[in-house]
Length: 184
Image (cartoon, rainbow, N blue to C red):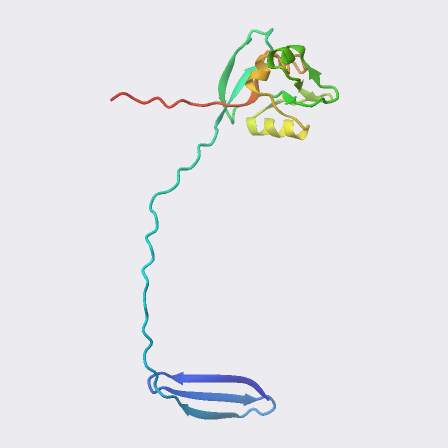
């Protein structure tokens, strides 16, 4: 039995040398083998098709959402505006299903034709002033979502505590910038 088998090939003389070592014996025995020359193998190169140089456009990332007045009986009544996602605004959450201690507004039902429950706090803790991503997380953590601009403007989350009715509240409605084409 051999511990290993090693083959060395001299390509110029096409001579292969086989070396073997036995496990128990430290001696090496070498055997020379002459290999007959082989004809060259033709190599065919297939050109690869060109790689497209156009890059797919990167989709626009929403960087602005609308903030809307917290209640229609306040000085900010009916107002909404775009806000950058890093701005800080108050948070009210909405749910399409009933939640314990959440308010269902009759004006919301009459304006939208559906039930929406709103809240500004969990227990005694107000949702607070946050950036847009944090506002979405707060609402998701209570099994809800940010209210839409429309829901805020028709009072679906009005009078839900924390004194946010006279503030601009984050909505889930994306702010869209219209591209204006310059005249040339």
